[in-house]
Each structure stands twice: as C-alpha cells, then as structure tokens.
Length: 262
Ligand SMILES: C[S@@+](CC[C@H](N)C(=O)[O-])C[C@H]1O[C@@H](n2cnc3c(N)ncnc32)[C@H](O)[C@@H]1O
Image (cartoon, rainbow, N blue to C red; front, top):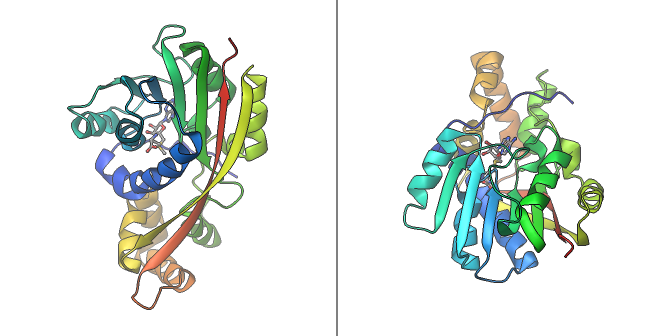
C-alpha cells in the first residue's frame, strides 16, 4: 500500500468531501465518550473545524484550541467559529505548541493516520493534558475497509492507480490504538467501534462530493476522460441506489480513550 503526501488546501471542498462525515462520526464518538462540560480542550489536526464545532455545541467547553498544519483549513475554521471560545493556530501533532498540562482533554479526530510518527503525536497529547486528563481519538478503519470512499479507492486500484492512503494507516486499527494508548502510559484505556452512514440525494451528489477529496481531481485527470468515465460508471453500478435514487454509504471508525495517570 503506497503512502503519498496528502495535504488539505481547501476548507470548503473538505467540508463536502469529509467534514460531513466527520460530523456523523464525531456525534457517535461524543455519545460514547460522554465528556464533562466546562473542560479545556485541544483539538489536534482540527482541520476546517468540523469536529471543533461539535465539541463546542455538545460539550460546552470553557476553551478549545485547534491546531493543524494547513492554513487553508484553519482559515475555514476561523470563519466557521468566529464567535466561539475557540482559537486556531498552525502546528504539528508531533510538536504541539502548548505548555505541559495546559488542557483537560486532547483529541485527534480523523487524524492519527496522517501523523508520520503516531507515537510522538500521542506522547504530545499526553504531555499537554494535566494529570488525570483525557486523551482520545477516532479514525477510519482504513485497513479494515471502513473508509467512506473505499469503493472509489478500490475502483481506482482496478484501473491501475495506487491507492491514496495516508502514511500511518496501521495506527488506526483497533488493536494498534489500544496498544499505542497503553504504551503511552495512559490508564483506563477503552476502545469502541463507530459505524455511520451518509445518504447522498443521488449518485451525482455522491460523485460531486468524492471528486472534492484531496488529490482526487489530479488522479481523474491521469486516467483521461475515457478512464474517468469508466471509473464513474463502475462506481454507479457498484453503489446501488434506493428506489428514490439516493445512495447510502456506510463507514466504520475506531475510537480510543484513556486517562493520564495522576
Ligand atoms: C481528515 S482531516 C480531519 C480534520 C478534522 N479533525 C475533522 O474531524 O474534520 C485530517 C487533518 O489532519 C491534518 N494533519 C495532517 N498532518 C498532521 C500533523 N502532522 N499534525 C496535525 N495535523 C495534521 C490535516 O491538515 C487535516 O486537516
């Protein structure tokens, strides 16, 4: 499975491609996590603020700090949450720009597979939460076929294209998450599977969302007009529509939580 650099440089496109999925998985994640209100959160790899917004709506935090390497994603997040107690800055999960013990809780929402050295990212989350603070994450089970655009990736592979996976997909397996959280010294570690589905009005709506993914448009160009048409028609056949023409896609994510001792 080839790793390729995937960057997110369009917050609005991200919203249609993945932000809506993040909302669905994030709701299920927070139901499971059931965090207290009034906490100070850091949202690592906050992207365009999709999960940050959920945190603000559902958990009444006193503060949320979002950090992400993408200026474009952060610009969308700042517009989206202009009046919220949320602050966004550029940074890397492996070197968080925060003091030790500054937060009550740290989260990575759909991020751990993008972190080149996941153990360093987890260690950083442990560092920036106070003793007793929570460290949690959820991520698509890409290797287990849980990615929402698995069918697209699969059909692209059949046409000879390398799958577009992020660099650390194995880190998102359930057993890997449990092991990593334990290895990081966290206690009360628990894992949970999240199953979600998203319904698109019709195939064209699905296709429009899928095309907005990072590096999808260049891949379609590489296939040429004929190849892109073949791909689209194969997907149309594969994704069976309901009687009203709608297309429902299922996806699965793995979630983990633990607590810094103290
Ligand atoms: C799939 S998006 C998730 C965004 C957001 N958390 C959400 O739930 O919608 C992955 C994000 O991870 C960010 N990212 C990639 N590498 C990162 C790193 N080393 N440290 C922190 N964030 C990273 C990307 O810029 C992108 O915004």
